[in-house]
Image (cartoon, rainbow over all chains, first blue to last red; front, top):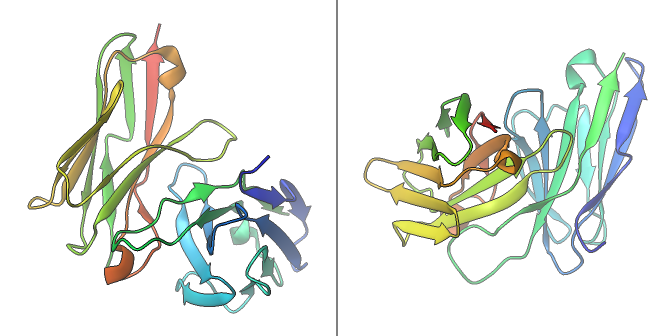
Length: 117
Length: 114
């Protein structure tokens, strides 16, 4: 499968625990994005990387959230001291930058569904 | 701030009829507008996109129109089929003039009745 992959697909945790999610982008893509989607809503932007540099973070991303992309390939999203409000689908997407002024087309992974009890 | 409004939130049509979903964006610097289809429990899948230098784009039964003056873009699905039933999201991005992130609408649940 050459698409974006995410692991795990489902995570159930207790409030206060730390969780980490992984995203593997399409191999030639240099941009990687994280979004959060709650039931009945569109995806909300969290952060994005170009290669290994984290270029933008949303105000939604509290200090309990941290993301890395150490070698410019896969990325991890960690949530510390989880809260019930963190329950959501966490989506990863990737894109390949071009010479156009327009944004790239983003391709999404299947998501990690987090449930915080 | 940046915002994308999407209407309607739900839409039911008879098989074979057309469906239209409308979005309005707030950031006049937006220049790329993708549409995604998301089936229950699955990833968002790109179905069509349009860039700000064109006003209309068509791909078989799906078309998108863009009115930059009104900051409005629409998805048109003709000859709807039961497999078109899903949630559809519009999005807007400013690209190099601002940021590459997408701002999504709240989604439209389309039901095609057989």
